[in-house]
Image 1 (tube, rainbow, N blue to C red):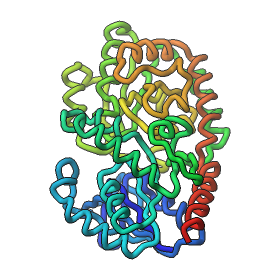
Image 2 (image 1 turned 120 degrees about the horizontal axis):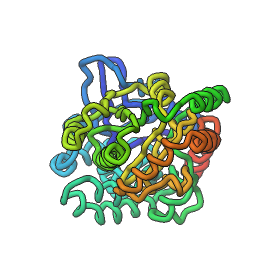
Image 3 (image 1 turned 90 degrees about the vertical axis):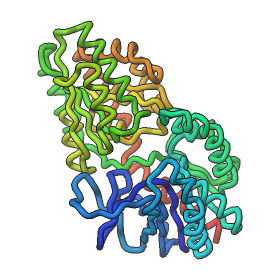
Amino acid sequence: MKVLFVHDHIFYVSEDAVFSPGRFAASVWSRFLDTDLVDEVRVVSRGQRLTGNTSGLVQSSVPMVTFDPLYQVKGGADYFRYSSEIKAKLRKHVQEVDVVVIRVPSFIGLAAYSVCRELDKPHIAEVVGCAWDSMWSYGNSAGRLLAPIMLSKTRNVVKQSVGCLYVTRDFLQKKYPFSGDITENASNVHISKASPEILATRLDELKLKSNSSVFKVGMLSNVGVKYKGFDVALKALRQLKDRRPEVNFNLLLAGGGSPDYVRGLIQNLGLDNEVQLVGQLASGEEVLSFLDGLDLFLQPSRQEGLPRSMIEAMSRGCPVLASSAGGIPELVDSEFLHAPGDAKKLCSDLERVLDDSDLRAEMAQKNFEKAEAYTDDALSKRRVDFYTNVFRSIK
């Protein structure tokens, strides 16, 4: 069986391999290849040619997986400017494969759905986020105008699919209902089960942390993506600094993307001495080391599916404060959530948590235990079983 996978993700292509920021490591393709029903996976997405080093990237290419990137599509208006070229490339592949896997929300995914309908080719939906939220929170009027269109089209992709895989247990299922028989929920996070020593070390460190210490607060996300809530985090910390000048903190922002937007916020709020831009981290040891060095992790997003970096932080026993966007309430108790954009509530939560080491220890314990349900051991079988069932229904 030949499978085509379609998404807007940017892969970085060198002469002999294909790389990605952490979320598309080579292990992603095991959900198809481990069914023992697939002999070829093709990937159509955005792409950039890689001429420098691979720092902060992981290899995505493996045998039996080939990539055909759309190099000219950078984002934004390019999806419309190059719509003919996008559909032409997709049409070639859709004609030659047995089934198309469309990860949504994505513009290239919507084009693939159109081609599948045109050629009467079955497709499978992977729903990893809310199309409405991602467009509405994009930060400009064009995004808000596109939000209802993306919502409607994405619902059609799900409704007409032969199988649907969600990353949430409940949130996305309600917004993008699937009426077929073959469906599953499995987060797209890829983490290994952490040893109990990780939690023990975390709890020991919490006992030694005094209120006069410098608290390391962190976020892990593309710093150029506005809907991740960097402004909310920075405003909350500015309020905390004004209210409690004796509290010492450093905000560490790790992730790729252009830092210009975040730098402007930092300067405008007068937090140059409290905030550090860490840059892109490679998945694996670099990310884990970063998370292990934090006292508190923030996920103040305006929209989310189920945030991978937050689950990674939880798996390291890291206390978490987050917004109530998307599927986040499936992960964290409501007392540690704030409404998207509510910097005042986040400031109050920060003050409460940083003042109470016993509470941080309780949060660490709960988060570590919760994350065990999202390890590769727990999720990989569900993904493979889902695809095995769908592929068999097609053959």
